[in-house]
Image (cartoon, rainbow, N blue to C red):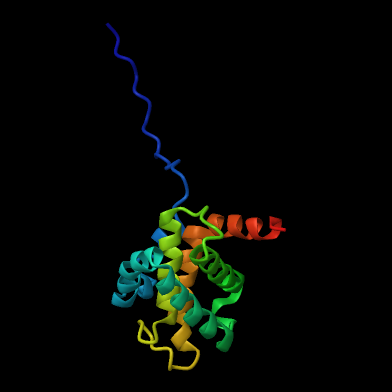
Length: 158
């Protein structure tokens, strides 16, 4: 009986899907891991269930957004504004077509945004908003489709 010849092993290539960019740069976003963001996430649920508290968050966030530079937020500024409008429409009961997880992410981002004592205090010129911008970018990444759907709903309203 003859033995079959074995083919030499070829180097294996990894044909898996491309890695998520967030996983390629571990721990780069300290604001997401901060105690202030953890607090914002915990507070988000109580905001979501209390329209008066959610309105107070909206008022504070809208006031802050009107008074700061847009520069640290770059391409996400339109989404900051959409988050604010979605929160307002939600507490008014006008818009409820949002998944609870997306709503909580948006509320947590806005809660972090208004917290003056987050990872980098807002009193520090320009740098004080970089961590806020990081948290906003994180939330936009998780809820972009929800925010796009909301903006489509807004434009379709009479």
